Image (cartoon, rainbow, N blue to C red):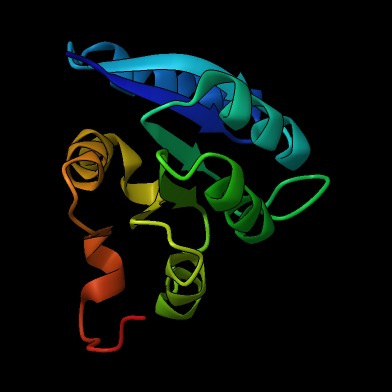
Amino acid sequence: MSVRVLMVDDHDVVRRGIRSVLASESDLEVVGEAAAGMEAVRKAEELKPDLILLDISLPDINGIDVAVRIRKIAPQSQILFLSQHDSIQVANEALKTGARGFVAKADAARELPGAIRTVVSGGIFLSERLTKGTKTLV
């Protein structure tokens, strides 16, 4: 059984890169893409994916606000943030929405498949770069 993933990022090249990373994983399937926040909300409601891979910086509304909306309309979908922001403060804010993980884009090629599997199996995932030297999470 494959994990159905909705990718949300406003940069086409990032979405193509993510798709490439996930394509080699037989248990991960990209079922949709969105380039903006409200588009992501609509697709989350329509597709009901297992996991939403969500950027924070989006052109219409930010990913934090998108996550709050998605939690209401598609509570069965897990949220994993993928962002260029790599501070523990930003990750804490993201996790307060009910998201289950945060991957720094700089670490995506190495961490993303495992992060997705951790989140859909009920765990919480944080990029290693965020947890080095810190003890403060949500």
